[in-house]
Length: 348
Image (cartoon, rainbow, N blue to C red; front, side, top):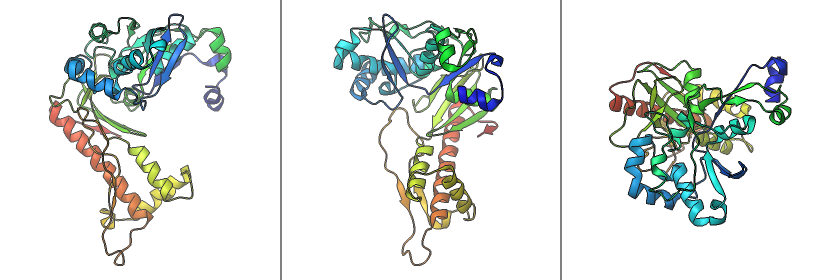
């Protein structure tokens, strides 16, 4: 925060508000005094078996209510894991939130569940944004309290003095939960009207179609979520670890960890290769991620043999990876169109 303010050229006392977004599916567990007992990102896979059990008993109900699954990715499975595998920690647990909601809490002292983040983690109803409290008793988690929900853009509270000192800002600045990082990205691209789609690509790549009502995929391959724009929802396909795969490939083709210069050089090399990548084919990570059957997949790079005819170079391998990313996104957008009756303008 201090660096951002410094680079903006603004004075700290000129900051009028703080918007907080965050990675989806992260989780923070609190005790009765509000102290953190656990904080973890979306890659915490400790609750795979608990998730499978939940899917067998309540998976369809959770999907229809929250638009998300499988349960191993959601908050419910991790809560069940703590109850069974870390009972001493769970005995102290009282409430739970997403990572962005936790940041808002640390700034303001107010714990709320932003509704779009809540639905993405399975803790809020996708239609209304209200807490999905009906699943607490069937899962045997009556010790856990779900915070009240709020809409993106709601002023949750103001910056407390201790947080203000830590961030280098003035006390009393309004703090606003701004929604999940992906949906906030859509808003930043101006994608808010039904029929428009946006692709937000980073480590993974989400393709989201804006809808005027919750639209569910009968195959349960696509997520249904809430947009940060009022009275709008999103239907989402995911291409998987796109940026992560490209970073891995760039690391292999460079001397050590890839830098910004590494990626710029690969872009230049790839731009000199004709479409088709001289016969090289990549299937590193990105594809269509079926949310009903999430798991490990096989990936790699293929190229023609014998190599003596036209050995693949760095440019052709980089081009092959980028082309595979484009095909993966195209297929995800096609699936969105099939489920929702078409896709209009696409912003990437």
